[in-house]
Length: 229
Image 1 (cartoon, one colour):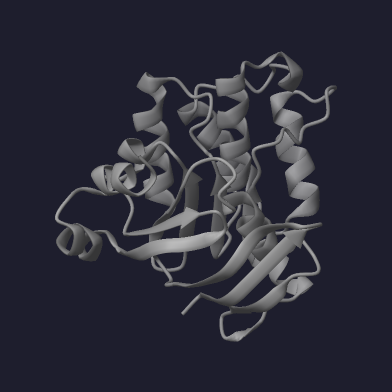
Image 2: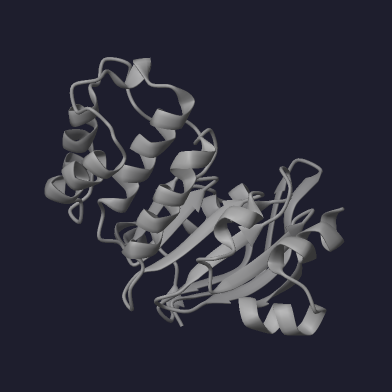
């Protein structure tokens, strides 16, 4: 098992953002972390990425308690922009290469072509959709064991989403695990192996896509409507 989370809890003041979350992630799988905004998806991702402190519960990564050293194996794509205004797109690649030993400039350049991004463009001039594709290219250019993609389709137009999902799917192999948080369930259902439904910091239900379809007698999209509608 790549990641094992047990009884996770995280509060901000009186607000409990994550409450008793227990889940396991296998190697080589793509998971959808599903739920509306404010359900705890981002907080959970930041906990696993080592960006949130002072939580309760247990996180095991490859069988050992998660430590700061595991950040080298976990690639997290946040919803917030994280590029300096002076940077051109090509500078983003150099910036990442300085921080992450597993970052491939060659892979980054390939992804820029696939994402239809010009290396000479300034990051600050990009539309929200183009900026989202740049974040994704920078994240997927790493050779991480676990990719945490927080709302990877936000701002990306309908036509480009299929291409983006194809690119994400190609990254996954027996040594790479991907978790995507989103509420655009219809876009990711064709590529995910497992689904984790979260509401108010708790897991409503989880399992492989086929198990959930058989158990509830409907698609993942329709199950989302049943749970949150």
